[in-house]
Image (cartoon, rainbow, N blue to C red; front, side, top):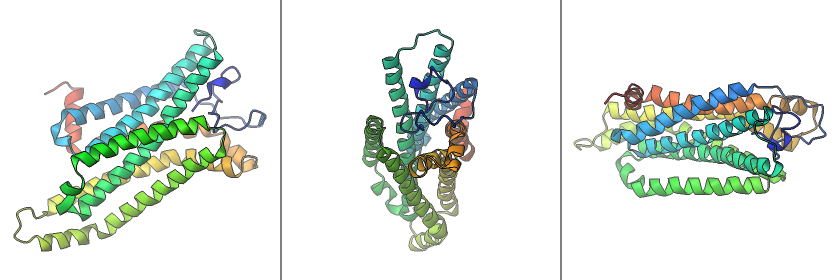
Length: 314
């Protein structure tokens, strides 16, 4: 995230107000990442996630709750790409004097971009949590899945997550000068981490035993779970575990940055770590690039649809 109000001094060292060390911390020198790198990664991520959304919308076999949530996760990743694309283009235009520097306009754009990135963060965590719940119900309440995860509940969850995430992001920006904002983000991150890890650990420890119980109870019933069905459900859980792992690997350094700002902003180690914020930010963009690759790699149906779209086949 880039604080455009710092553009006149250093186009590559800027940080959002809520995250940045104070201006008098002159001993902090940030590792520079070329704007061209950001631009390329943003475009790549945007194209990948657009393809995922189009593929899910186009293929009726992918019209299920899990893929609806994956579609929203892709849209959330698009927010990161679009926000970075906007700010990188503006940085290039300003640095080359193609447009003039107007502080109120730049401040407004900065707030919009930061809101989009925070919204992406909150929605990504929320939809990963929703997918975890969906996989949990799929494995442990297979016979009641369609009565628990109804179309109406899925739509309500999607709308609720987007509205709540947007409201939270705007609130964070309005009160960005308070460390309470950072603390709330950290608490939310840890809460979702514990929740999803708990669900996934429970799934993988008990899934096979539970599937055996279901099979025993369904003897003579036409809708009995076959080994292939059990494997498919576990495969979905493994896919989402991979997404969860990549998310926390890519966003983890960012949250460590937030934690250090709250806990030890003046400590030498913290000041040293602050230098690498831009690299942490590149990792965030990488998350939105890697996610679509995982979708395609783990889902044969989605991979086939993506291939048909790319090669314009029917």
